[in-house]
Length: 520
Image 1 (spheres, one colour):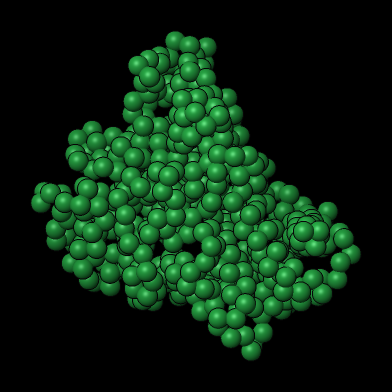
Image 2 (tube, rainbow, N blue to C red):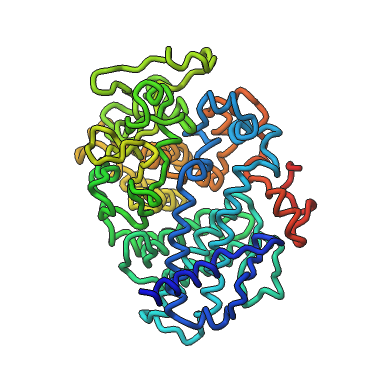
C-alpha cells in the first residue's frame, strides 16, 4: 500500500509540475530523473491513470460547458450575458473575445499538461520493436490516443499549434507548426493508437475502436488546405469499428442506472460523490427553479448554458423537432413543475431581464441526475453533485459521421439508409414512413445532416467542431444564436479562438505576431 501511494505521488508530481516559464514546457520541480521514471513500467502505468483522471476535468463544471457556448444549438443564459461582459463575448463574438478572455485561456491550459505528459510517456516507452498486445504497446497506444484526441481539439479550436514530439524537440521547439504538419501528426498518433490500443479496456479508457473512430473524424475534419481530408479513409476507419457496438434505446444513454452501454465507445466516468462529480447541473439548470425549490431539486441551476430557439422548437415553429422524435424529451426540459408546484419568474424579478428572460424557457435535460434530488433518499441533496457519466464517443455519432462520408463519396442513397437506422431508434424502433429520409441531392443531405446531428448529439460537445469542419460556423451561429445575431459582430476569423495572452507572454516561441488573425 505504501509503495502504491508513493508511486502515485511521484507520477502525479511528474505530470503536474509546471514551469514558471510556460505551460508548454513543464519541467519537473522534483529533480526526479525522468529517464528513470519513464523506464519504470509501473510508474508509467500510474502516470497514465493520472492523465485519464485529469482529462475528466475538461467536462467538469463551467469549464465543461464553455465549448458549448457560442454555437447554433446552445448559448449562454440571459442573466449571464447581462452580468458578465467578458464571458458574454463567447456568444456575442465582440471585442470581449480576445487574448485576455479567461474561459478561453482555461480551455488552452487544461489541455497542454495532458498532451505533455502523454508525450513523455510515448517518448519513454515507444520502441521500434514494440509488439501489439504487449503491456508496453498498450500504454503507447493509449497515450497516443490521448495526445491525438486532444491535439485534434486544439487544432480545431486554435488552428496551428505546437507539436509535442519529444524525439524531435530540438527541431520543433514550442512554436506553432504548419497545419499540414499538425494534422499529419494527429493522424499518425491515432493510427498508432488504433494499432496498439486493446480492443477492450476498463470503462473510460481508450480502445482500438475509439482510436479508429477518432482517426475517422480526423480524416473528415483535417482542413482541405492540408490535402489530408479523405472521406474514403474515414469511411474505412468507421467500417472497421462500428460492428463492435450497437445502438441502444436512446433513453438508456441518459439513465444513470445504465452506464457504459453497448453504444458507448468512450465515456467519461463520474459519480455524485465529490470529488468524482461533474457539477454540470449547476451550469445547465434553471435559476427560477433554484430560487423556488432550492439546490435539492435535481434540475435547478443557474442558466449558464441553455438551448437556442432553433434547438428546442418544433419544425412548425422554425426549429428542428419533428412529431414523435423521442430524443426531444431526453435532450430538452420543457416542464419545470416540481411535485405539483410550478415555479414562476416572480422570485427572480430583481434580475430585470424584461423580454430576455429564459429561466423557465427550455433547458438542457440529458445530464440531470435525480440521485442529487432531496426526494431520491440518497442524501446528496444538491444538484451541484450531479455525476452522470458523459459520452465522449458513441455509435450514434459515428453512424452519422459515416453517413456524411458516404454522401461525400457520391453514395447518398447508402448514406440515407444509415441515417434512417439512427432515426428508427429515435422513433422507438419503428420509423413512420413520413419520417424516413428519402432520396435527396448531395447538397440537401449536407444541409439536413446538420440538424440531424443536433437532434442526436445535442450538447455533447461536438457542435463547434462540426460547424468548423463543414465551413458552416459563421453562417449558422449568426442565424440561430440569439446573442450573436443581436451583436452582429461575428466574423470569419472568430472560427478560431485567440491564443491566450499568458502564452504569448510566457512562451518566447509564440509571440504577439503569431496571434490568430483578427485578434489582439
